[in-house]
Image (cartoon, rainbow, N blue to C red; front, side):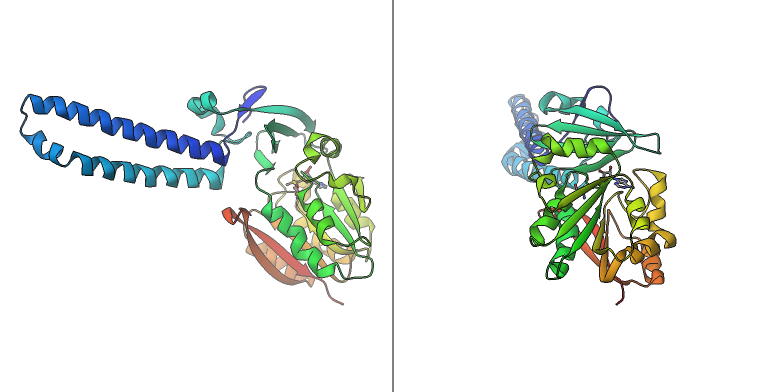
Length: 324
Ligand SMILES: C[S@@+](CC[C@H](N)C(=O)[O-])C[C@H]1O[C@@H](n2cnc3c(N)ncnc32)[C@H](O)[C@@H]1O
């Protein structure tokens, strides 16, 4: 993943300029071919005459095709971002290293009880949090589905008398900021964050993209495992928002698997107030997880939200409602 102190990233602007470069390159190649063909004509090579008569049309077609082709590649890249810091592809593209600005590693922190490390990187105004050796956990350039996780739930509970929300995983604070946005002044939002360094990062420069939501007086931070908070409290929250992994499988650390088991979901159910909502973010669907939610007694709905500006990957959000 990360080769040293500098790694290379590739944002949408980069992708577009890269694709434009390739389009220009293909125009250049078409023009060279044209000149090359002219030389042959002067030597009266017959079979080239037909080609030259139509060279303009052929060149236009080549440019058109290459434009389609490279726009397709640019779209693919915008969906999968395989060059971000922590990606296995990033060391392969030395050309990109020459034309793109580098990602700078700002800090690294151990993941408690797991043995791995979390890494914060920055390039210009963009931030990324990666699990070293695994890949990106979160990037500041695409957070629509993290916002939606809060919006879908908080709009429903904002009218309650004193809504309390538990968020599992601070990350870059986008879900927290969205929750605060949709809730009123009477709300309380508790954020459980496993890695103390993430809280420190959010109090510093990482807090800027989400607008420093930790400074909001409705926010309470609990440094530690969200599972501990769930186990300790009964009928305490109107909503629980979980975004600690990339889906209902322990990615940040294996122990997180518990959260998505029948036991873990039963603990969430018990921590919710009547008609409480459990929302879980995931990179994709998982039928088994949906079944487990049903088994525990939740009424389950699913939303699919694109990662950024209605483009890119389609993420899944489970909305599970507890009983009266
Ligand atoms: C994908 S990020 C969350 C992104 C967040 N929704 C946002 O809008 O920026 C996951 C976060 O969950 C934290 N985390 C992972 N496991 C956790 C656990 N068991 N308890 C609390 N936080 C956890 C990670 O340290 C990381 O900060």
